[in-house]
Image (cartoon, rainbow, N blue to C red; front, side, top):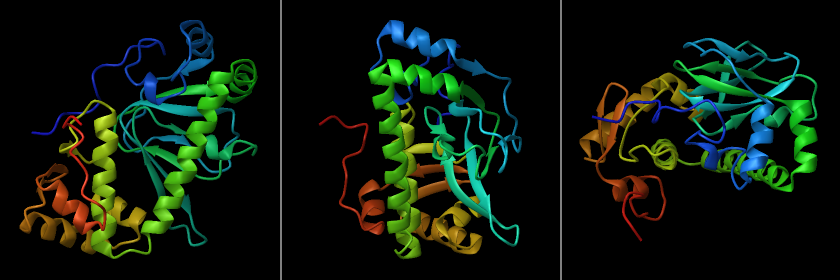
Length: 248
């Protein structure tokens, strides 16, 4: 059975958080993390379907996910949803709106989630005094741009390549969070995956079935187990990679 989310229980402070190495505290000294902790607000859990923010909401905070998963999306001219990302624990959202007074899109919980809110004004002031924090902010922003570029690049690939790349990407992200890279529970629906990959839900379902019949994966509802990572890499047009759990 895949490991259940959220990952091992997170404590309140940034210093005690098991995901700090993926978030803003990475590479900061203990005293600097304490300063950062003073500007972090930890709210009640968001329940499935609850909004973290909506388009045109005044931007006063950026956010870091502590547990659960958040979906971000835009609405087109017809009011149709366009999924722009799935944010996992240790990842941030809202940074793309820095420089604007209001959020450009929507963020909603895919499951019960805990989110840290960091005041934007305080973060700007603190990052001006702590070079390591400023560097980490730039690193996170750079990662976000890279993810967007990769998503655009893969959007030109065949459907089977897109879904394989998506599953391998999730596998890597779960491994970074101390979870199994080969057995996990998808927080999003197949329709949401299809929306993100610009595929119909029928195509996504058909591909899951094809992968399973080929012995690449095993599926039970939203539970996914990767059985043949090398085959999935080849399906995605990637070089075969070492299983993240194997030592180098």
